[in-house]
Image 1 (tube, rainbow, N blue to C red):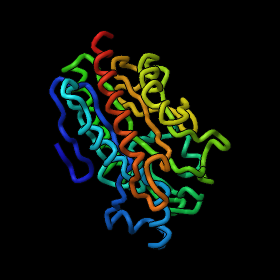
Image 2: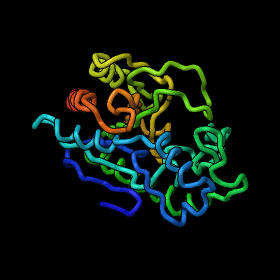
Image 3: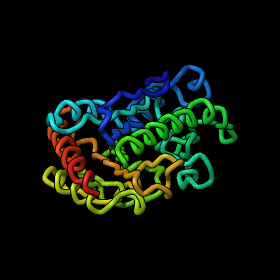
Image 4: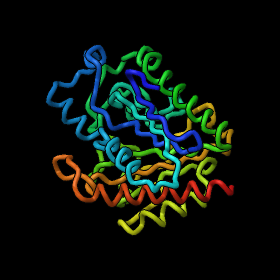
Length: 270
């Protein structure tokens, strides 16, 4: 199934794994661009900072490297920039990033500069983009849960080597790989498998500098068989200064493919 705002690439019917890529796109529809106050140059600079560049490529190349015994995961990719809506934020007062103007609909950018007017009403963007996206992903998770008895979301991100000034947490470590977890939805065995595969590529820290992982609200803190883990790869481990992939991409995709295969084997016994 595909939509103009997101793409679902079907996997194997016996795969419970969903690769979720929410922030790889730079595309902003013209009607949404009209509500953003940045000049075109500043907007492109903001997109360089805020986009998880080539994480969609990372996911696709990982699928190509899976062994033949591992069921093919499902792929869910956001086709719109997170400057349209950020599908991983809470759409209400629960979202901590509201404090810096970067909730589900961003009012400010990574530098703290105004992105939209302070009194901007984001309800139309939520209705058109956020809720349909959330519902589609929730439906996919429900289908994997019904088919396999569990669902595993691997939430694929990257982050810039230098901290953005408009951030909640300052002064945290910036390892090659950050593992984002949730106490309810990320079991210890899953974290251990992830660290084992990725620590050979560099330092791997949990919930630093980014914490948590995406779980559709329909299952959040209620369905323990919906597992989720966020991988936040520091961008310079696979991209050069011009945001083009370098040889590190192959190492990361190989490690992720091994992790998926191992997690699939272990999950069947849980």
